Image: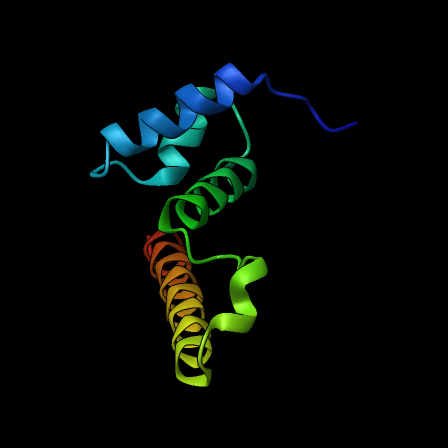
Length: 96
């Protein structure tokens, strides 16, 4: 059964990750006593919320085709960077 975390714990965990960018997220998750996948999911969702470009609101019909394409490309770039980050961490872990 999946463990439930309080919103305060989630907020504190994300703040810990932000305050320690030099520490690998897997190490942060281990220190916090939680699964890496959960922490990474929270981190990814938090980044999307902070970027403000994850969702196109009701005014989307007012956006030009170039603006919509720009938003799509930014999302694709962000997702690609996230995937690259995960692969780099996996290589560093598996390469030991």
